[in-house]
Length: 335
Image (cartoon, rainbow, N blue to C red; front, side):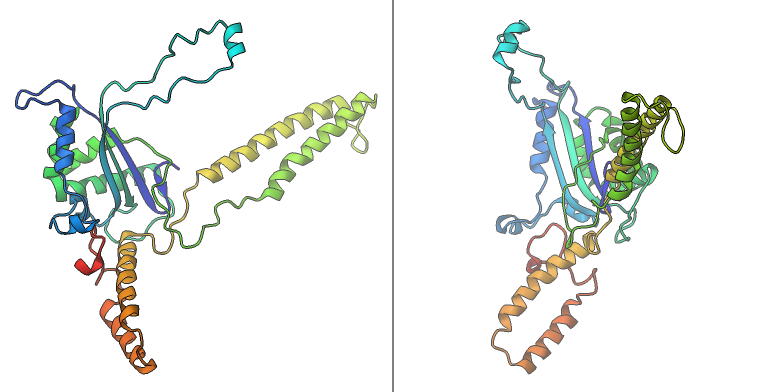
């Protein structure tokens, strides 16, 4: 299913940027203005240098965002000429000096990609399935939450895009992103501790469904070739049996293929610790427990038992919400 997998929405939006002519108020194109606004937007505290800056990405204010990326796409990538056999080119009179049509975008686009928990409330349990309307509700809720926490940053970038002049409220922004939404089938992450059983198909039943009518068809065909007019036991005309078996084989094959494809369209189930609060808590515990292991070296069994009890009391491993790692910060000890 597009967009939904493992309890997350993989959001992708393409907002067309206004004509690249310069604005009256500033001598740069809308495309360049969008790039400047993106360059001014703070990044997450994901390195020692950015940690010292004292500012973090505005997306870190969201309690559902696992990943967010925003960039300007000027045009499609040209991968070069398609290779072709030289002899076939001569026979088909295909002049290699004549260039083929190349796909181009009609304008630059502001691309926004985000991986979010597929929920409408922070900390809610991740769903196994969502229909199209429920997915739209998740996207709208997320867009509204972004508008409430980083409206100024969003305006600075999206003001350069087509149709954004009508956006006034959080609901308007949600409608705008919905119009720019592009379905995607490419997940951005994999948190699974153990791979899910998503490739299991009832192969025996599927093969039986196709092989049985196929064998019936082949037997009828062989008997017809050797001049036998009727099928043994059932007495059906061999030509009729062949046509019937052929129709059943094609129908069974189509049903089996449809079942396999529909099974592949099913989203993977969420893992136990896939939601953002659990991921942040895991990162927090990983770092603090590493420090605990170093500091506890050489302790006696009695002291180690006492120290570990204090560790559990202080860091509360079963509590996802506190203490935990702040979103957008790579080092939990600086939280």
